[in-house]
Length: 492
Ligand SMILES: [Zn+2]
Image 1: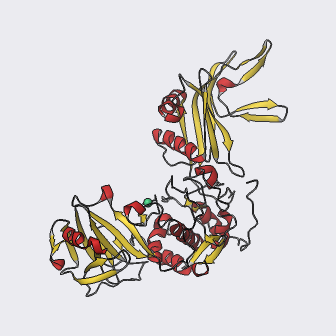
Image 2: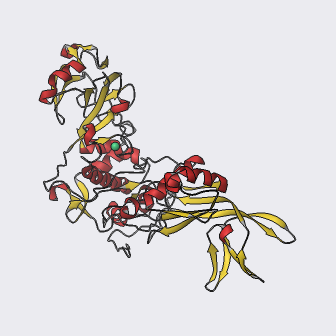
Image 3: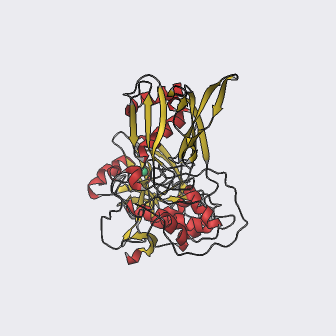
């Protein structure tokens, strides 16, 4: 892609003096999502805004031996209460994967049971019920009408809970609910509720679009659509919902992003540091036109980060990685050899050892995993591929002795003074007897980064900055997803 700059129609920014300083944690999308099937739609059928979503809450190794569920209310906003718990009882029934069928009321609005215990309302254990009804596709389920269920005194969930039982007697809990109810539990965990309304609306449409593209992609083998972790989208039920975040979902209900008449995958992440990276150059695979690199100079408040790593530590850590295991001795230089076009995101890194042997790794994901690995070792795990290197080194100056320096070396060239970003040991100097090594040894590598997350699609902090400048959700989405349209699900 030569240029991804695109003129996008949208509201002109209105002057705003408001500048909110955000200091909270944002749950970005998974650092390493699987997007090998980007841009593919499995069906040409009409999409349903009432799509049912099955979210795995506890499953596999997180399955529970005992659960204590209680029906209750979620207080949304400062005063309004959406759900009323008056004179209701928990309902016991079964799920066919999308709908709840009531068998009876539970005797109490609080249930405490393990998978192997007898369960009064069905006259047998949950495990026995599930075993008996597996062949007809029925799974034990619980619902609290017009309310929400709390699991083990933790989060509230609307819709209903499917309670599966494993052969070893553990309980798996799947939350079954409508698309917009699901999104109302996602938005306040993926974005701070204090973000401007237009950025929350952009987030709702991006998340709705992403959801449709991932219904059968990641967790088909688990038997549900999505998990509740940032690996899919952060979803912790209703506890953090507010009137404002609910409204962002309601106002945009039925709207998705489309490209060439198909739903566009609304990938997003925490912060870009001023530019994004293309899906193709980050993960490889098919080129997806709307997931290309764009610059977002308006983005402020992104997390800048840095860490310093000694050349000895760098040698130890890099050589322990499979990618660099063929290198020997000390790593003398670690260089950026490719950067995304129209972006500052790094696409390739080259390490050279003391014998002059070098290894280059290419692709955003590989670069990300190396920088994240080094960052974790240095206590800076939140990372991105938007970074640059400088070195800390020492130089012997006649008459002054050895002095420590940090930063890049300025070199006089025919094109003016330029920054030398390679390792000082590789810097050559002109002397009376010819060109020689500078003799400077790098003591350590300094990694200076901006942003957090994979960098593909919409930057959540960027969306916030654009909304603060007065742009609407349509402009925000079109800035990050090149060439998309906002469409009604019913039109696709
Ligand atoms: Zn997942």
